[in-house]
Length: 455
Image: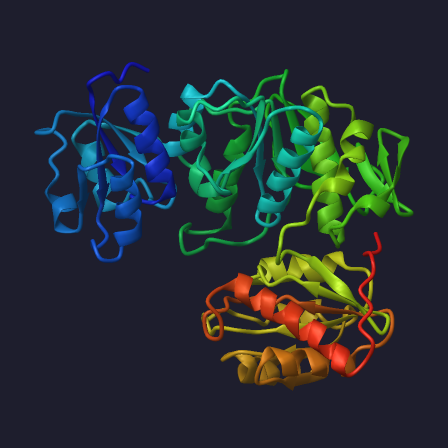
């Protein structure tokens, strides 16, 4: 792509916009960053852009005054959080300017091979895991895309990369044209982002585009039973509960194509969904020539991501698990359904107007009791009390104490709130840290005995 001395507009001043701007400048373009947000709301992003030498940043009313024709704009690179039908990008389309998504733009300049990961839940954990295992096996890698640095930012840095672990959201996949990966992972699919899409069919269609351009030499790594077409790629499947897949878990051991690869004991992540993250990673790495046993040998060195089904410790025979990053019902459901022991669930937080009735058939039989926190706690108690014991707590310390008393030896006490944290905390990370501190504080009541997690 020859952009030397061409006028390029980057639509969106966030992390993806920064990456696209850096890459466009490296290709010799004259870059204008445009965002309709108010300058005061974009202060941090604008400071970052200006620290990188981008002075032509137009926000607020100035963004609306940008004339693509008068500026002789050749290309507009759109950030994934922006719908191409919105007024700002539509103005460029109407002027005959090509719109290109940031992921597509980065892909066209990328010389590294890719493992692309999508799914409604678990993308970030799987992406980090793929990058860790690649690096541990001697292949330069890093997580990027919808997780951390954008693809364009990584490409612009011209770092030595063998295989990138690329998290791709439905928003990023909407605008791909040629994008493809040597191995593409489809983790799962559930309702989400219906504020962006008219319905489930449109959301599913956007995510399915991960396989739009694959060929027979590529590998589609798909959760067993998922009803998604993997195009022309060779399909390989994984499951933590069914033996009909290429890779599966049975009796606490990893299996691949009928071969016993060994015990799960090195895995520090909890839950069947995280076992499936490992299985998917093994199949993707095999597509890049890495023998699965070698990848599994590196698993013990993987530090689990904080606040995602993170084992905190054991106390009085109870496991304590921090899943504070479960800020929606889908992530909460994935956590609850993935754990094999009885649960006492700490649930609640900010009132976001969500419909919690799907919890009614999910929790009984899996969850012994719930402890409710946050501004939504009374509403949730009214909903859940008819189906299982439901107590309200005023803070996290009280919630952990109540959960301990409601639980039994062999249970897990799980913080998986199912909503955001901003009623009580700065974010889900602080909420998870407060939970871990509250567990430690129980040592004043009993003997706190942190042990290695069970597989």
